[in-house]
Image (cartoon, rainbow, N blue to C red):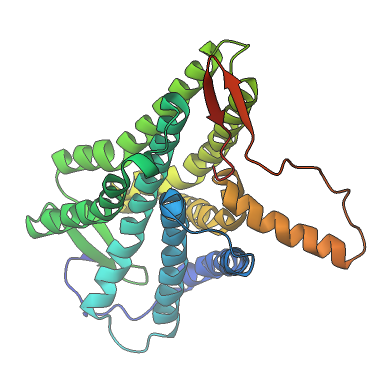
Length: 323
């Protein structure tokens, strides 16, 4: 039985839901460890935080909110002895959805900025810093307004089911199409399109021009493509089903999809090494420090004492150390 009211009978999860959440909790705790380790290393190794890092940081921050939100949800549901409060039901229904959508937009923005850097050979963070900051702040506001309007217009409702968590149900086909197109498909299409355009641009670059820079960008795109493929496989089904009627999908399928979503946000603590050079730098410094402590020092590599650059056709192309 599904109701659109609150505080009637729902106290906690039933036995089946609770056993499933034991699995999700275990994965979440692994994610908390990995993300805590990542942030500790960022501060311990004094990794530079600036505007060019803002979308990469924003993406990882959404994982922190999602992991923390799940722990709060688990704490409420697993220890509940009183009836459900309305605010806790809204929290369960909207919190996970909001930050899952937000991370996809931040990932797309990061990809677009990288496209600008590769194709135009400019840093958009330097040329348009105010626009970048405005975009970073506008995206969550847009998503929040979209959710508020849909709720106030009764295009979606928060429902609760006995023994289960509260969820959002969209009762308008038009709104489902809007959400699946704008909030789900559009960021994915933009990201894949920009990746393909970057590869086409790199391929068309003359072999004698900026060879090192071209190879650097090709590796960057390949790594991002691998990251994005893993991310979309684990993240996509959950958000897709949320914008459909999840209650029409069997419980086992919902559970498998939830495992993929929680696993994605958990392994991001390590997977983001493929997303940005500074994350890789943080983990690498810790890895090298451990090897040195164990007496297994790696053979030192000789790096130039100045930023690498290739000169071609009277132009100088720097190789970024922060992408």
